[in-house]
Image (cartoon, rainbow, N blue to C red):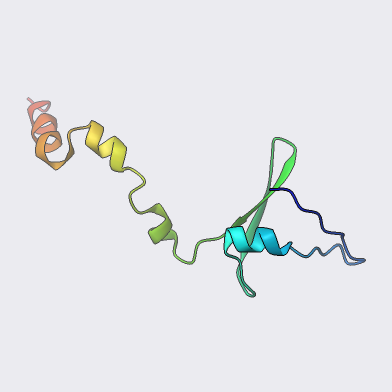
Length: 79
């Protein structure tokens, strides 16, 4: 999705309605700007960082055997 917006004299920009809708942005939300590979990127900051990180390591934990195998394997490696 590509949309345009013009900078004001104060270098402010309005985020186009289509972009706001896709990102679920509303008045008062905080956004994060970064430069990635020479492009400006806008991301909404999550309301809860802990909720945003929930489940992040799930696949890695499963690859280690989860709660069934990992503790036993770790304990056996101490010998």
